View 1 (cartoon, one colour):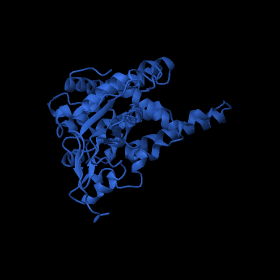
View 2 (cartoon, one colour; view 1 turned 90 degrees about the vertical axis):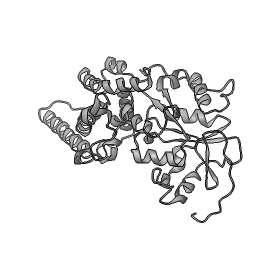
View 3 (cartoon, one colour; view 1 turned 135 degrees about the vertical axis):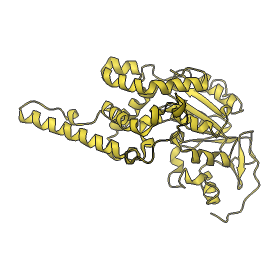
View 4 (cartoon, one colour; view 1 turned 180 degrees about the vertical axis):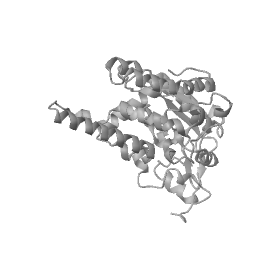
Length: 339
């Protein structure tokens, strides 16, 4: 509550900071969904020196963005921090996993910095097309309707409704002609949603928002004045525009505050990735014999999508051409290739 007493609190390590008798997180995991953020959180939660709650721990609490605006209502952040273990005056630290934070606005990133300018940022990166496909495939398996999700972006809603009507009309015509119709023919596929997402994103970012070229290099946000671009940053394709988002973060945090982890390393070489991470957080190494799960080597990749016929060659070409300058900019920003 707003008038609760504030106790003395000493927080462990160089990246923590006390706030009204509690410790702010020493690090944030901000990688996108289906980029091994949940797996990484599970590993981190088992490190002897780390407390990192599941995202569900914050449900029902303050808005996870508004809580960081300490100038408006300082007690909101205190309430938000109640989801963490009390690590005051101990040798443990806390961390936060919120995949959606990667797409936050410059103002929100600045709020994080004001609260704790020393916080470490962990970014998990996965090849953008495979990540998108995996996200949509997972959601469709759960019976998810893309029309009323993804921030209810007007362009996505319009395109998907038009596509659904076309599928239904084709099915009716086939039945009228006596041809068999499978239920799947009137359902969305991951490819349908990916292509719709691509067409809706294009007009919302100048010069592809890649950062290649003088004009695009200044771009960090979508065209808010365009009605069809409302909430476009909630759509999964935008989550995969890594260079665009990390430009915003690097305008606020120094580059040595960020650690970029490849999805493939977390899945296939977890111990190596975790020991790098522990060193980055200035924490003891993960203990010898730490149990990890080596992921399946047949997880979704662009090559496997093409070989299986899950996505057509034409759609993959459109998506590849869109992401190519983004991937090039990411290599330029960090001096390495990620896939």
